[in-house]
Image 1: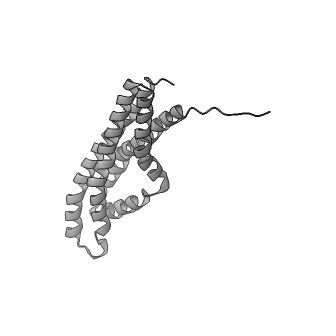
Image 2: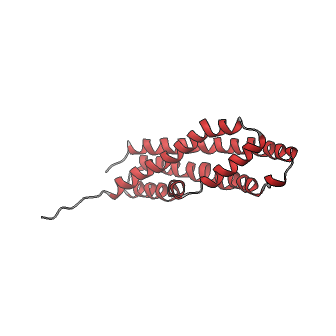
Image 3: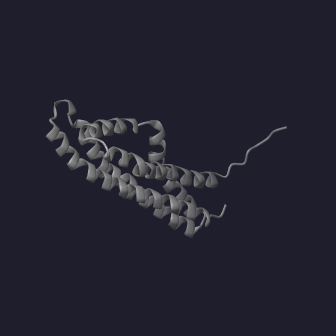
Length: 170
């Protein structure tokens, strides 16, 4: 006796289009609620050391699958909704895609990554206390501001994907 599994690719894509932005939104929200606050309580030198460590740790396959996966799955889910003549779900998913691409990925690449690169290039071992303090002052507020923008964008993209599910025709 043969058993077959009927996989609805549209439903699978839609679920993935909710799941991945949810992971990213949760990570960014959690980071904003805890890590940023914890780092903010550290001395300048410990802040720089800790941020460098976190910056290196985040570059891992788990994060990259969700962060980069959204760039693939959100447009595919949008296209499927359009192809299935489902305009309400299409516009919600298209908006989620644009919010994610611009507000999360774009802000990360254009704003946070250059700051992260500056952090990586900062030579803590040869810096004076004044150098470290000045570096932190020029880094922390800007990085946190951009992070909050992408956190809000990730949450909005996630909410739009959830709303799109209520409009889907499977």
